[in-house]
Length: 442
Image: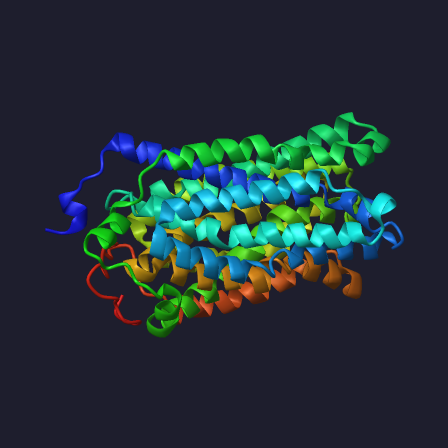
């Protein structure tokens, strides 16, 4: 009898797990979205001596700089989750993120502290990145290891859905502030509001996560005295193919998400001439479309498998970015349609990526292995996507230049999925309780 069979999980427990994972993940990504929502205002407050384009580039450079700490966070929290438990790891990630975001909300600007202000902003972004390095994959492992057989993607959809809802909430707060406050009030205190909300939200997330027992899979590892003492090393040594494959298709997930969410607000206002309120409203619409689409894409993933859905998403990103960017420049309705089209493509790849990144690694090294592959994609391609897109538009003079970048990235991911990804939907999550499965067999 396997550990999963000997300790069945009730529907009530699964609902409690889903709520704790969802709310904690919401807190993490609301905090991260706050920076993107206020990017144009932050540029003016922390880099006032630059011209508008250079200030925005500097702001996105600091945004990307937050990703520098993600590999350290992935290594630390991955090892922490594999050795001490998924739940303890997630409590620490939400505490770290909320604290760093709250400190951004009380940070003096360039006018008060000079160059110390953007330097401290960079360090706090690094703290956010350190936390995020363990959050997404950790929450994915936590919820999928509790999910019933055959419905993993539907349960795991709580992770990308709450990412979308967090962005909706962040953009909604931004839209409310930019549409109701004067420019003076926004620069004086209004921009701080989304960051200051991190403190109460973080305490709620921490409380909920502390009330949930660790996953049946991890408890089985502990009961069998099978916890891996060096999970990071073992993941690299034995699961190299899985890590490389995860990285190869996650780059499209990363670029697609950060172009759709973080970049579009500034892109629409700075490059396409929409007002800040129109840009915020468009972002709210596209992220709502993303959140709703995640539910249906997850159902399709459970029915058809991870591989067909990943192929469809990557192919879609090859074919549709150019029409989507063209629509964005055709008027507000077109902008909402174009960004929503990209958002739905991100939902297709994201809802299969969450269960797949858990399923493709054996239990002993799951948190470490998934964190390495997924985080590397987001560090190298996700965090830099707004900066690269802004630079491409500036260098080429073409407003649709980011679409070509998206097409190239997606073409690479499509090749990776077609040649390297093996279907994971039917794999046992408790494999590796007695031994790590070598790369290529799981």
